[in-house]
Length: 306
Image (tube, rainbow, N blue to C red; front, side, top):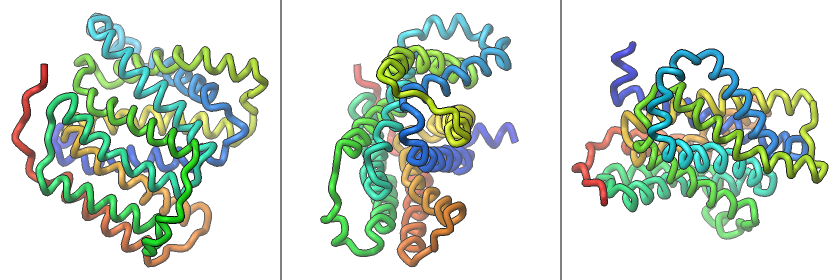
């Protein structure tokens, strides 16, 4: 088992876990809008996680402190864009945009990751990998427009959609730059960016409180915080980071197209919605595209730009 999780094949297990975790978070984030201020929710989630890891993994973290100090710059950068910025802006955006638009706009993430990896590090994807990303994107669009392309022309975009685009851009940079993180244990890295995420969100949370936008102590809010801390953050970040380590950011990006797939599955399971033909067609295209992108032969390695 230990050998398996060191092989690229493990990405087929790890990356879908990340996508499913984030799909569940989108559902909860829409449900809790109005009860949980975005920055306050994120501040609590990162504080809870950093305290937990600080206690449970204190020996590991203590051993990695010299490496964390040496890589403080990259920790701050990755923590600000990948934890504080991405996490908070996601909750803000989901208070304004619709589920339909979220599927369309969020589908730009793989293209952003491929572009960021190329512009920053000169990474390239082979033709089959690019074709796989395109096929999975078509699957997302098939679900969104319900096999009626003319519906795409009637979409209206608002502030939430613009925030989703900005958010996906930050996630793309985070994913591409994960190779810059210190060579420490995964829990030590998550602990470090958790601390950054909490400290960065603290002033924003204080501002929300000053304006009377308080966390409501409801079952939904508490459940969302627990899910965000242990599933959206800990589980999803660990599996996503490891998946990128195994197959690289460009190839891993195709798995983000499975988020609408999991969202539809959750809706049919927990909300009683029906599976339609467009779901089946979209699922098939998404799975086919992701499989093609992930299994394609690697392009020749590119030199890091200096």
